[in-house]
Amino acid sequence: MKEQLGQLKRHELLDEEEISEICSKAIEILILEPNIKRVNSPTIVVGDIHGQFSDLLQIFNSHGTPENVHYVFLGDFVDRGENSLECILCLLIYKIHYPANVTLLRGNHEQKIINKVYGFYDEVCIKYSNNIIWKMINSVFDHLSIVCIIDGRYFCVHGGISPRVSINELERVDRFEKIADQSIINDIIWSDPFYRMGASPNPRGNGFLFGEDVLKQFLIFNNVEILIRSHQLAIEGFKWDFDGHCLTIWSAPDYMGKCSNPASVLLIERNMPITPRSIKIFQKAKPSTSASKNTG
Image (cartoon, rainbow, N blue to C red; front, side):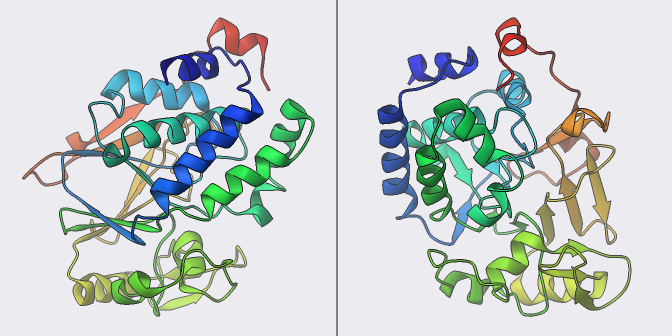
């Protein structure tokens, strides 16, 4: 494991056979996990990473690796950034070696139809001159859990909710099937909070815009307290909505190299409420010498 992680940090390509083995072992673990992972604090929640590998490493350097710390990742590991492959391989390696300490949720970019267009496909094809590894990793994506509930209180998902989403329905849905346009999985990986009441179709073309009333009804019905999500750039690194019932965590600083935004992770401590001190802000990591020589 250490050797493979070292190669990734030095931006050295792993052998295709190694990646195939990583994907196979990851699927063996993920296929046994439920749609909804239930975990206890302490844990660290990480939002969108989008291929910013140096920033993922900065998170581990600041807060500890999954060897000793539990992490919940809210999806969108790939696309946009230059090192999507390093990001997902690093996370899968940690998942294989410390499965109880790594929860990986599916985002809207963890599907072929999206990551073929927004960078991951091209990155893999340039690095390996074929699309075999891209297909392998998308097979892993097809096995990711879709929700994590922390301490029975915090409902963590990539995007959001819709009027037809409930915990009972999410527990029963077949997440291994292709994501249909009108499915509740599509809703939770695409939906966004909105300042108007009610719910309406999302201009993104998938999911819903949901208002405070829709969210509060969902929280009460499902006996949870706060929705924790990512999916939208938060220009301050995080964003509270709906009187503290919806928290967006964004973990890609200086998004796409042009937004100059800070980023954040969320530290949920045992028997402690979420407070402003729980949100840890960080800035863009300085690229390493090896990273600057090989931008993928």
